[in-house]
Image: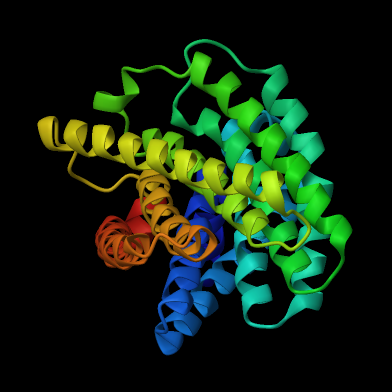
Length: 315
């Protein structure tokens, strides 16, 4: 059985990193709403998944370089960066700033090589995973801004500001290549387009909370937070209507890329409520969080059903 489990893990595609992203962001949302026991449970799950996928990432790098290189060219490879930054953000909220800094350094080391490999192989049209170029970049910004707010250095706040700007540029680049037909036909990763706006709003809200910027700069960041969150919510509404109009039942590993944007939208709304003083956003964030938790449970149930017969699935 152990050999079968190891073989199954080895066959997982890079998109599996979205499960870490989804679980870690839900952990952050539960923390922000005061559900610490559930938050810690989700963090443990996210951390365990991250360790397993990291082991597989390293194993492929040293034992199957051809496959590793081929997968590194795909946008889904950037889930390695995004998942690491979201997990680091949760650890920082826990007070574990040292490990969070280490994860930031790791993600920052992976980011340029993977980003260049992905951009060099961009084409038209692209699936929703193309927006991971933005998500990974903004993930670096969110973690850097979080650590800056925790007193780990003002330079991290400036780095986060640069990441925010670059992430928005990459979002536009992905948008012009996105296959809009994926909105009604995608298997789940089309939601990353909305998730990229959500994490951008979260990055802007973190920066708006920083004492580094006052006056007009603070107001600009506050406005950017609200605009990005508004675009995110509009995108979610369009995607939801498309899901209702053309249901796509059944489990697909890309459905974790649906759960992540839902959780990220909830966290962005919760953070924006604090950064902008718009109280109703907190209520919205709390409601969206439980929707994200329900989506996480449904996706996990689908995963469990799909792999209930592990030997026959991978045989």
